[in-house]
Structures are given as C-alpha cells and as structure tokens.
Amino acid sequence: MARKKTQREHQRTQKGQHIVNMTDDQAREHIEKLLWPDGEPICRHCGSVNAYRMQGATCRPGLCRCRDCKKQFTVTVGTIFEDTKIGLATWLRAFHLMCSSKKGISALQLQRNLGLGSYRTAWHMAHRIRLAMRCEPMHSLLTGIVESDESYVGGKPRPAAGKGATRKQGQTTKQPIHVLVERDGRKRTRVMERVTVENLRANRHKQADRSSVLMTDENNKYHAIGPDFAGHKAVDHSKHEYYRKSDGASTNTAESSFSLIKRGVYGTFHHISKKHMQRYLDEFDFRWDHRATVDSDRTTAALKQVEGKRLMYREPVAVKTT
Image (cartoon, rainbow, N blue to C red; front, side, top):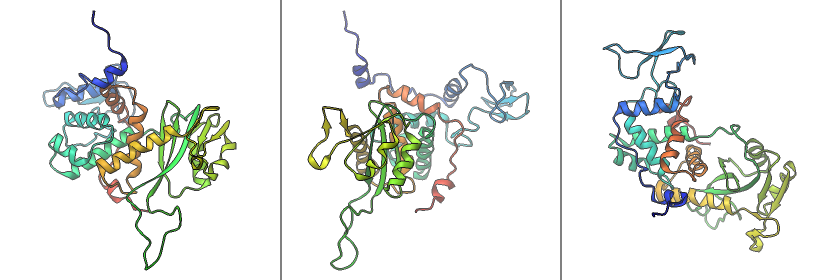
C-alpha cells in the first residue's frame, strides 16, 4: 500500500500548485468566491448586502447594483484591481508568481512571464500586489518569544569623500531595517531612519505585545528597552555566543530572515531604493508568515487582502527620498 505523503513532502513537491490558465471571467468568479464567501454581492460603496447581480443583455459580466445606495459596482471596486486595464487572469498569475518566489521576482521577469507591454506596467503591478500583502501593525501584536535585531541593506559602503578621509567605525550609507520575529511564528520588518533607542522602542511597542520575552544581541540600545517587556535575554556575538542552551537565548531566527531579504536584494532585485524598500519588506514578511502553507494557499491568503487598498501609479513615483 502506498505511503501517504507528509505535509513537508507535499510542500516540497508542490504538485498541482500552479494556477490553471483561467479566462478573465473565471478569474473574476474566483475572486468573488474569496471576497463574497456567502455567494451574494456586497455593495462596495455602502457595504449593504441588499444588492443583486445585473442580468441585462448590455450589462458587462460581474456588474452588480445596490438597492440601498442605487450605485453599480463589481468585485474589483475598492480593491487593488480597481480601474485596472490588465485582465484579472493575468493578475492571478502575477499573485501566484510573487507568492511562490521565495526570494522575490523582479518586475522584468514578471513582464516576460506575463507578456506585459512595458516594464512600467509590471513594476506598478508588483507594487500593488505588495500593498495587498502588507499586514497592518496593530492587526495582531507579536507574542511569546520575540527575537529582535537590526541590519543594513544596500550596496557596499564607499570610502569617505576627500583625500585621506576615512569613515568612522560602524558608519554606513546603507538603509537600516529592524525586524521583530516570533519564535516559530510571524515577523514584522520595518525601515528605520536611524537605529536609536527611541526608534527601536517605538517600533517594538507598535509591533510586539509587552507580555512577550525579547531575545536580542549585546547591543547596548536593547538593554534600555528590555525592562518594558516581560523578559529580556541577550546573546553576546562578540564572544562568539549565538545560542545559549541554559535559557534558549538566540537571534538566529531574525538572522535567518535577514538572509532571505538580502539574497532577494542581491540576486533578484539588485537594487532597492530607500523610498520603496518598505513594500519589499512587506512582501518578504508575508511569505515568511505563510511559509508553512503550499503556494496555492499562500496565493489565496494574499488575494483575500486586496480589499480597501489602492495604489495609484503617481503615488510610488512621487514619494520623496529622505
């Protein structure tokens, strides 16, 4: 008798995890099932459930009308798909590619795989999907054992300008980022202007519950914040201490999350500007949070988060660098 595959083996093979080539109508129906699980349309303008599907010969597929506010809508209104000129079947394939690529997928690769007309279209599409992947900070605070660490993302630091000038120890032009990650759980990575006690404390209080136990390295900044939480344990990397058996102190999970981000930057994206980096971090956080699921379930989880989020092309382009 054939042995039943374990969950880990099923995740490794990923058989049947590709999205079937749907038509745009099939893709719309798939999104409706996810966002309207009861099968009845919900008004995108007033939230009323007193709505119906329009069946006229001149009505486009998926058009609905609310009996209360009298407005027409489709399932894409009020989501990242609103006013898109790209077919919903193409959107679903893009979601699957971004959710199944462990170290990310570049906009140029999306353009080639999806047959999009321009790099700009693929770039904006990817940013809209990253917006859907974002988890709001207060949605669910991190609990239990929470590892905390900071890192720097970017190219190699250049020497200081001027003949004979040198940079101070620890000085860098890279972008600092800070991660909080539950042991065997979720993580939240945030861009930081500077790594200071005030910034670290603000981010911890926003992302982690005060009943949690913090695990950090020997950085002095963390010792000022540790008393704010139920417990604080630190390992001393300067003494080659990376895991302490006596109390389980370690930041290895946080370091592991950084390695994925940096492999994505160096190997896939090659360069990420500071003004867009937070969206890329949201993408890596989403895949980390859903790492125990198969690709199709991860894609479904992302599609369920498209509501209430819109990103116009002029918004990411107009963001000013700090």
